[in-house]
Length: 166
Image 1 (cartoon, rainbow, N blue to C red):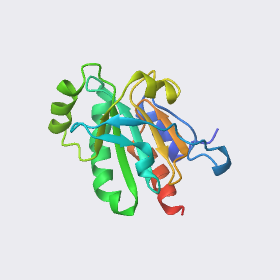
Image 2 (image 1 turned 90 degrees about the vertical axis):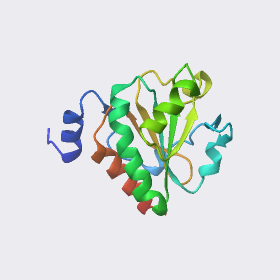
Image 3 (image 1 turned 90 degrees about the horizontal axis):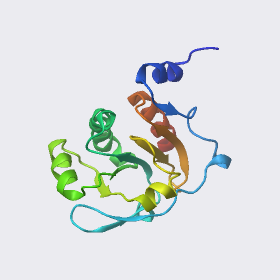
Image 4 (image 1 turned 120 degrees about the vertical axis):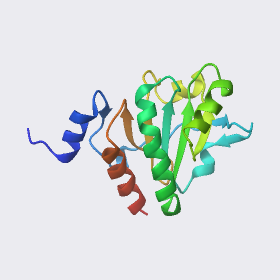
């Protein structure tokens, strides 16, 4: 077995599981649609992000690895927004906005945060562990999936590949 930069990233990232890079176009399935509320009570639909590369991150305030990833996503949202990236955080805390909103403010989250539910978790294959991230191409298809903590470089590689594709 040859160790690549990507496989080394997995080894050093801990228990995170990722597929090997971005799926071939023919293997991508359309991401399940959803309509969830943001902190202001506005309904946000995944369909609103058509034409963007989307990093859809399921997380929770109590999740240690999630706390490590969030600053990466804040930085990516700032740096890559103009190139077509949108980060969406789906908080899976049962306590709701009472817990999530102050946490998001403390971490200075600059991307859309929505409150998730069991229906959306099941639509995405049962979000059984956190963090869990889906990277969607501009057509709204799931191009890569990452379960648990993986390295920032793995996210970067997948996102950059999808941003370059037209």
